[in-house]
Length: 135
Length: 107
Image (cartoon, rainbow over all chains, first blue to last red; front, side, top):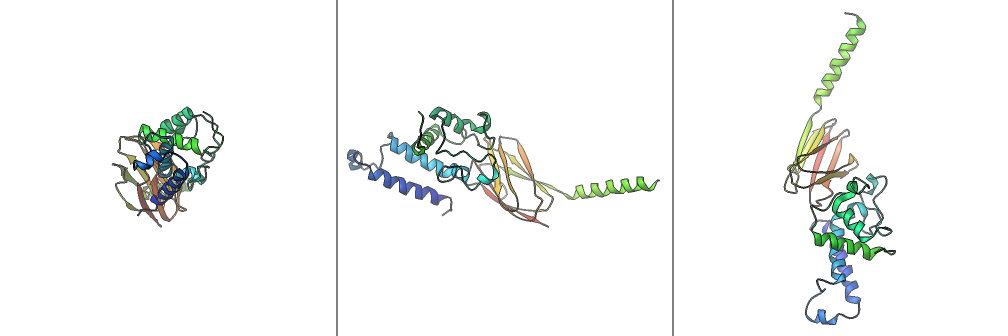
């Protein structure tokens, strides 16, 4: 198994435990679905997988800008836990990349690689880990 | 011919000979993959990464031998990196985590 898979698996397991610990939603569980597809928790779950696969190299597993590639850049990759940007800005940044947004040219444009759902899920995930969110 | 002119001519010839020894290797990227998985080059050679895919690639390396990030570049474009130190360079793509190759830089 490739070593890059492990962070994603660990992230999945921790998020599953988090979701399982939440009260309510017994109806969905009784129907055999781990998460309702259209629910917020499912979007966070999927977005976490996208983050673990594509973003951790620069932004780090904690999304604080301390990934293994961070040492290449000055200024360093953004601390996404402390971002003051709203959801629309974050989504545009993901889709168009840093250069198009007047930010770091080293933030790739993900619009051709990720689906709309993946980019939306990633935005939801980033919102979920930001302690001072702005809508 | 005056000695200073001969010296200049000799210096130019030496520089030209030195320049001629360096090679530019080309590594294409196609189908979300580096065409070569292994490449051996000499110190002073350069490697040009050419994107043959219809979407952007972002080639980078975190190796001690050579750390670099070529940034994102689209179809038909290529970017070069000079390998000026012997060792192993593990090359990746920031957009496609499964893309990897290794360059051995020999003295």
